Length: 316
Image 1 (cartoon, helix red, strand yellow):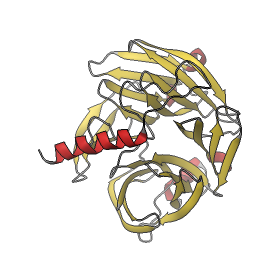
Image 2: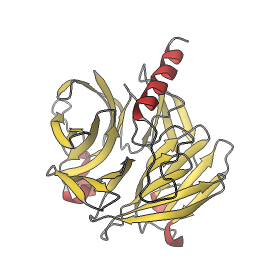
Image 3: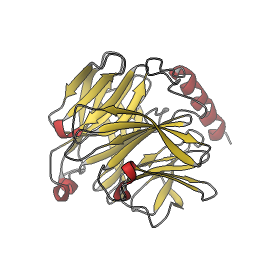
Image 4: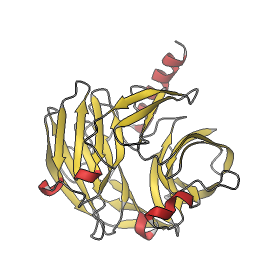
């Protein structure tokens, strides 16, 4: 059985799947708009979810009960994705067009896109690998972009590389081997871009694609009905299971709370096994200063380390 957390415009959900196509259980953990779920590698028995700007709610993965709150500041707005690490919190302050890191001691690093301090680029998704960070810029009506930044000594961000995407209105970003993956939400696609020869493959879903979880064998993405922002609280949503090796859809699982719609899907995280979609273990450098030499830690090694740590904590 595989367990997922799903943040929507209306709920924080817990989902259990049997196999890749059978929904066993769907329950609500909290009401309201949820975007940003962080499952820290160093804390495998807890997760953090953003319900309202200013703080995370902290939950126990085993009991699914809320444990408390972690503040990240009242001057941060419209946070989309957020990542809790051993050293602090990374987040996208979408309202102010900036990427932020807030250390455990409260020290901040900030990076404003093109120096602009209002929501122009609509940055929404991040992926951390060692001292580098991959940031997706939605860019609204313009083509989306990916920024790759170095985080130097936790004091400042330095732009290292930019990648222009061929779609508008994109969300989520993940890199494995020589491929960059993202949701072309506006076009209802999940895209695999080859970073060596720039060729791309797309899987079409005919709905708003947003939210990405990455397990050992699968990609799991959210597919929701197209709707305007003020109508997304009452839309229907499904999760699509995609085979990583074949890059083909295995199944689409509808989510339904009785007669109630789940709302537009914003975020998906796996909590029954390691989720690779937001952060790799510390000291992993995905890029080795050469565009055509992308180095990545063995996924099986990461999974083995995570399983061992979680087993130790479960026995305490």
